[in-house]
Amino acid sequence: MPINLVFVHGWSVTNLNTYGQLPVSLRTELAATSNEPANIHEIWLGRYISFHDEVKLADISRAFQAAVDDQLAPLMAKGERFACITHSTGGPVIRDWWYRYWKGNAKPCPMSHCIMLAPANFGSALARLGKGTISRLKSWVDGIQPGQGVLDWLELGSQGSWDLNTDWIVEAKSPAGANGFYPFVIIGQSIDRKLYDNLNSYTGEIGSDGVVRSAAANLNASNVIITQQDSEPGIEYHTAPSTPFLIVKGKSHSGNDMGIMSSQAGQELTNAILSCLNVSTDANYEQLIATFAAQTEANQQTERLEQVTDRLITLNKRFFIHDRFCMVIFRVSDTEGNPITDYDLLFTAGDNNPNHLPEGFFSDRQQNSRHKETVTYFVNYDILKGAAPVLNGEKQVRDAAPGITRLGLQVNPRPDAGFVRYRPLEIVAQPEFFEKMVKPNSTILVDIRLQRLISKQVFRHEGPLGPAMPDNKTGDFSEVKEGDQFVC
Image (cartoon, one colour):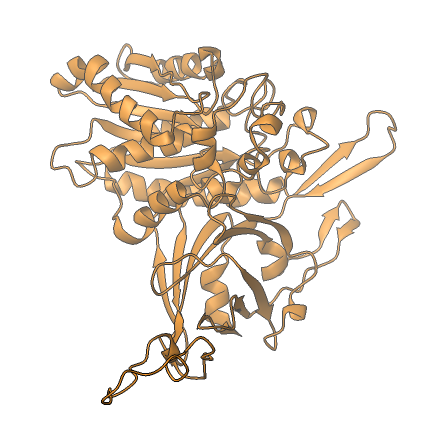
């Protein structure tokens, strides 16, 4: 059956030239590799408004459904479906659309494939910088003032991102199948040094494409629910359904030379997209999961060491080691669902000591500006797990990283005194917790639920009442202390 391609761009785009040569390249490649005269029926270049503050991501997904009803209905009436190719924020938009309109729907989804290029599925570290700063970054937009409504969703640890992704991990089975769609994620991990902003190191962050972290794109994520109890904490582990995930060589988020969308696609990227479009069965899908995983491992090994020569001082060479990273997003609340915004959180290792963690494992920490109970840690997986020496020819650039075998967690919440308080939570460093909590190129959502301790003195019955009402002196309880008995 002919393929209908629908392209969905990223955030704060105002011109269809953002798609570059990719649509034309795909048409040419598909025609050349198909037994049919032309196996692309139609190409639709989507456009949506994201640079106005009042527009939220959910508004865009609802408008997408209206556009499908208005403009693609004739195709649907003939039993045809469309494959969607998204960039950046376009990925979360289409995923939100599917959840709103097609999750659990008995009718076949009109979208058969969703190929997400550098999707900000778990947000972007740059979103925390604010509208004014981002509008000046060449790596994301060029002179366009971004919209706050979508920016709020894109901030790491946002409520919208948390809800969409925990549902994907905990509640949803794979959407792949006859009535669903086949999702795919492709991203680069290269930095276009011409777009690097010296005032914002995120634009050159290792483990990202200059805008989106590989871990934040990957849908092969996990959710860990930690519930404080009277004895040992209860821990639940959930893993998302497997999704093909590929890191391609030499691609950054944007830019005319290296951008995954706006530059010439390149054969590796084109072949990867064609492989996704050729998936028609669950068996094909499972095979591509394995193929992409092997290709990603090989590509990351090839790109492990980047050498940059200073243009002014030709003998001055800089090395960038492209380790694999992991993103861990913590959300701390109590048993009543109240957010806890004041707490200290520490990883531990070895003999349950924070000081036993390897030097250089920690890269970044970012608290969500609207939901301060949520904080995102970006950690170096290879340093934590252990890695061989990094060599440039025979010269050693970095010593071997010994790594750790056990990981633990300490949470010290506040208030820790008064009529309502919290007590610390500790998970002793252990191998299983390490393996579940830290995974390469992946995001782990950690939902920590602490017991809310209420003093029994908050409410007491005084009596029984005698023949006379208590006078002012004996009835005064303004100086009552919280005591040492609490209701959990």
